[in-house]
Image (cartoon, helix red, strand yellow):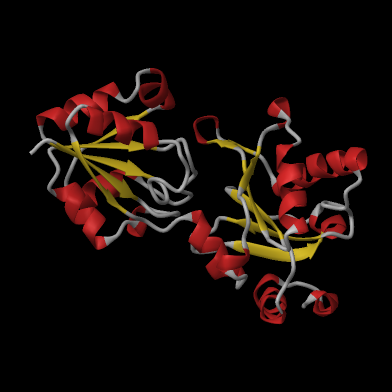
Length: 265
């Protein structure tokens, strides 16, 4: 059967894949994986290959974007092919084009979902999923943009939380830190003065979500800017209106100061 199955790997190591995802991988004719859209801190390719009993071909950003995933599509035309993706395959739009191209070429596609950063940060923080607005990525300084600040400001205007995904280049082992992201956003605040990201703004920093030892810290921006979050990957949340249960959760799980209690609605 010629088909392409997109399988989510989860967030941390080779044990994050679902039972169904593992079964799909074990019965595939060819298996591909990308490692550039997220850092899986404790993932071992050798251990994963032993687990699934298959040789895994690692593809690069160039293979998928510049070459339009040709190597994967050709494999899928010949037999069942699994494409392994960190997190959930389509939480970001990175691989949508590959799926569309497969369908256009008569290749059946299926999805096996995995744990994503979207669900992990909600579970870790205790913040309410339905109160999150638009998600945004904060880019590296050389790709500086005011868009993240504008999204935070608009979400706050609507009383909504903002999840900021911080830029990374796993191949180069380069990751935008929470401290750097805050500094960049404060620079835009100095220019626009909308009160979206000021020194007394509440924020929540998360490192290694989905891992065995994630770091979660809620505080005011002026204090969070100097907090040591350890190893990547990183995420940053700017809350909108906080429910009292969200505040209780941030105090209990993220070490938020008791002063946060005055912020709840």
